[in-house]
Amino acid sequence: MRGEKRFRSFSCPFCGRPLEGPRRLQMRFGFTFGGYCPCGAVFVYDKTGRLLGEAFTDALALLYGEDYEAAYSAQEGADYEEEVLIWSSSYRGYLSGPLPLERGEKFLFLRKKG
Ligand SMILES: [Zn+2]
Image 1 (spheres, rainbow, N blue to C red):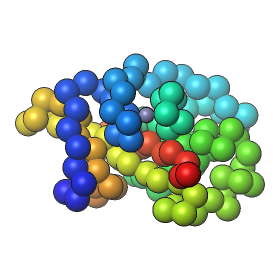
Image 2: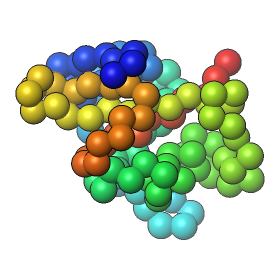
Image 3: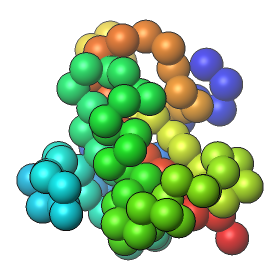
Image 4: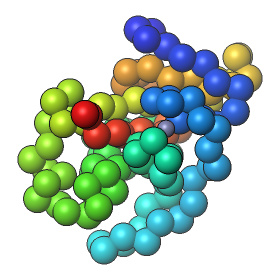
């Protein structure tokens, strides 16, 4: 996996800070499970592992403070970066890297660039 990082505890893949696990976040159009990092990153727990589904939309909305217009016009790579954190039972820790394709539980992290 390109750019893989390893963490012993649940941590932000951008800055490496250990974080609390996801909690229920109330949003305008429902709720999601995720959280925030002091470095500006947001994350959403994606139980299904389908990264382009609801979890991705929720993460983008959180990143842009539920300004949905800004969220939908944002470009990956130019406006924000993404990282995925997965639990690895063989490593017994968390691994992160750019969008691994395997299905399964994931934490999608987004952070604005600049
Ligand atoms: Zn962070």
